Each structure stands twice: as structure tokens, then as C-alpha cells.
Length: 93
Image 1 (cartoon, rainbow, N blue to C red):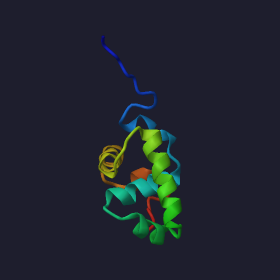
Image 2 (image 1 turned 60 degrees about the vertical axis):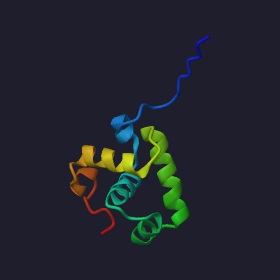
Image 3 (image 1 turned 120 degrees about the vertical axis):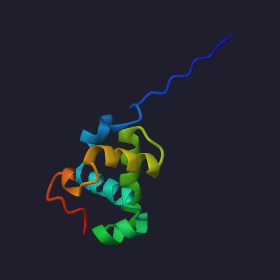
Image 4 (image 1 turned 45 degrees about the vertical axis):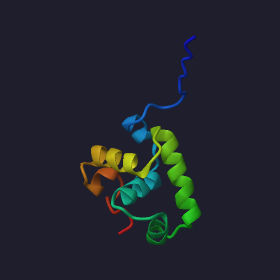
């Protein structure tokens, strides 16, 4: 007997990048720069719980499970340039 399990949801990768809000893209950028949730929260004047909420939403939209995967996608989508995030290109500096 063979059992096949299919995961429902987005495929891992950048297909959901366009679905991210501006705030989610900025948080993703800051994660890709190595900041912790606490550091991101301070920089964006948010609660660490709010940052965590946004990260859960980002992971779900992109079909990923780790900050490393998020950093890879951010790099692919922006080429390492914050101006590619959209908006004013200033991710909470």
C-alpha cells in the first residue's frame, strides 16, 4: 500500500511576494539583514508580538518555515537593494 500526502498551500518560494504588504516586506528585509524580532520592533516602533504576527503571515503567504528561507527570497526579489521593496526604500532606518 502506498500513501501519498499532498500539502495544500503556496509552493515554497517567491510566488507570494506580491501578496505581502509594505510592512511585511520591510520586516522581511530587516530579517534578511539579521535583526531579531526585538530589534525590528524597536526600529519600526512596533510590539515584538506584532512583528511575530507579521512573520507568521509572511511565512504562510510565501509557503516557508524559516528566517533563512525568507532571507533568500528577499535577496532574490530585491537583489539586496532596499529600494526594491517599494515605497520610499527606507526600511525603518
